[in-house]
Amino acid sequence: MPIVKAEDLETLASRIFTARGVPESDAAWIAALLVRANLRGHDSHGVIRIAQYVASMDKGETNPTPEIRVLNETPTTAMIDYGIELAIDKARASGLSAVTLQRTNHVGRLADYVELAALQGTIGLMWVNAPLSAGVAPWGGAARRLATNPHAVGIPGPDGPALLLDFATSVVAEGKMRVKFNRKEQAPSGWMLDSEGRPSTDPQKFYGPPKGSLLPMGEHKGYGLALVVEILAGILSGTGAARDGIGPVRNGTLMLVIDPRRFLPLTSFHEQVADLVAWVKSAPLVENSKGILVPGEPEARTEADRRANGIFVEDETWAQIQAAERGASRASPFQT
Ligand code: NAD
Image 1 (cartoon, rainbow, N blue to C red):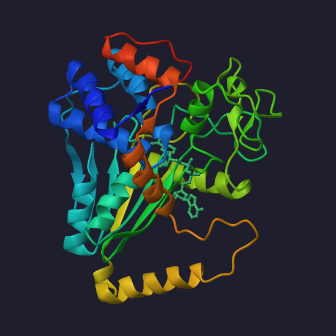
Image 2: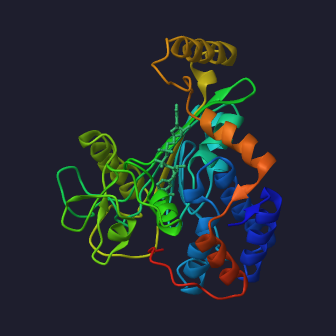
Image 3: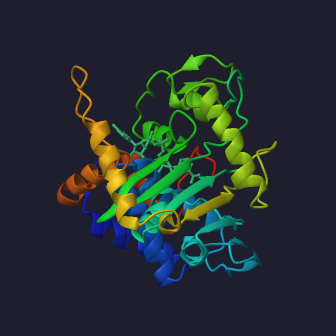
C-alpha cells in the first residue's frame, strides 16, 4: 500500500501518457489534474483513472493528439472540442458566455475547470453528461438509464475562489464505487441497487455481471437534475442524451461563464458573498458537528494534508499503474 508524494505521482503519470504518444505539455496537464484530484480528496478522479485512459487510447477511443476545432461561434457562444479559456474570454468581453464541448473523453473533476473561471473573477458553471455510460437508475426504476451527470459552480473571491461546489447528481460519483471495489470494501447503504433493484452494499454487484445501479442523490431531486443535465450538456453540445448501449465515455459539456462586474462592482460582490458565508457559519452547531464548511473547504483542507503527508494509493490501483507503465493493460471491470 504505497504512500506517494504528489510530485512523484505526477511525474510517473506524465511519463505513462507521453509513452502513449500524448504531447508532453498535454501529458503534464492530465497528470497534474489527476494528482490534483487525489490531493483534493477525490481519489475517484485521481490516478485510479490512469488505467482507464491508457486502455481508452489503446482501443483507439481516445486520440492522444487531437486537432481542436471551433465548430460554431458567436460573440457569446461557441461549440468546440475543448476549452474553458474561451468561455472565460467571451464572458470577460460580453458579460456572459455559453460554450459546449463535444467529442471529449472523460473530463475528470469539474471543479478544476470552474476554479479557473473563479480565479479570473468570473462565475463558472459546468454540467457534463455521458450518453453511453449509464450507471444510475431513474428515481423509481431498477436499471441504469443515466450517467452520474455532475454539476459544478465556481464563485470568485478576493483571494481565489470563495466557493467551489462540484458533485454528481447520483448519491456519489461512480468513481467512488471504483475506489471501494479496488480497496475490497463494502459501499455504505443507500448508494446502490443490485441488478434486481434491491438495495445492496456490494460493489461487485454494481459492476456485475449482471450490473446493478447507483441511486440518484436526493431521490426525485437528483434524478430531475440529472435529466436536465442530459438536455443542457448532452443535447445542446451535440454529444447526445442518454440512450441504449454501452460505449466509450463521451462527456458532453456545457460551460456557462458570468462576469459579475456586469451586475455590480466586484468589491460589493465579494463583500456580499463573504457576508453570506459568515451568516451561514454563525449557526449553532449540532451535537458532534465538525463545524460548518462551505463547498471547496473540505478539498482545501485535504490538499494541505496530502501535500505534506503524501497520497495513499491502494494496491490494486498501484498494480494497474505499474502495468500501464510497462505498456500493458491490466484487466479491469470498469467500463471506459
Ligand atoms: P461529493 O459527494 O464528495 O461532494 C463534493 C462537493 O460537496 C464539493 O463541492 C465539496 O466541497 C462539498 N462538500 C463536501 N462536504 C461538505 C461539507 N461538510 N460542507 C460543505 N460542502 C461540502 O462529490 P461526488 O458527487 O462524489 O463527486 C466527486 C467528483 O466526481 C466531482 O469532482 C465531480 O466533478 C466528479 N464527477 C465527474 C464526472 C465525469 O464524468 N467527468 C461524473 C461524475 C462526477
